[in-house]
Length: 204
Image (tube, rainbow, N blue to C red; front, side):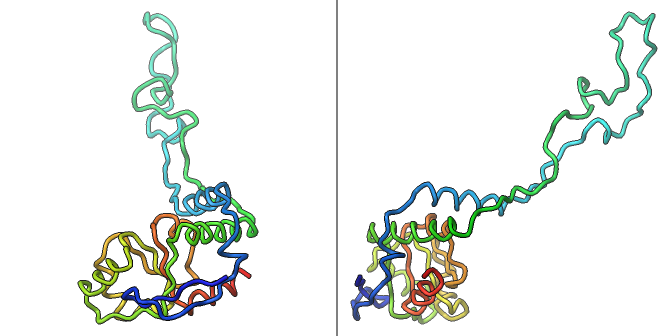
């Protein structure tokens, strides 16, 4: 299956054969959703916590005698019914990570790539060059009709990376860092020819 190769200014420079098993499958929305939830769960800190009754810094002695006061009988001030007391079954520090089969993660990535290609939101460029100026790069993005984009380029330390750092709604990733969440978050996917070959080797 052929796809166009463009320059960063939008001019076509040739064609490239892309793998149909990666970019032309029926997208599985359910798998994309599962992979995104798996990624977001890994990002959660899980530092939420409350104090249980045993952790409250109050005396554990009985607040007043059992009989003769006319009040309801109860124990210490750390009981859950009182303000400042412990919390029953509250959140504790824990990890939200869960396992997800490698095959499902791979199919989720293929599904989102196929979805981008099907919707004409996949842009393959020969190479990413820039003079380091954000204004000139923004003009090239306007020619490519880009206002929200995830960019895959292994060289993340050149002048292009410096120029794009000031453009909102963009993210620059190496091919090894490509993931379902970032591709789904941005409308367009811009990938270099070299990064595309490495991605196909990884997913084949």
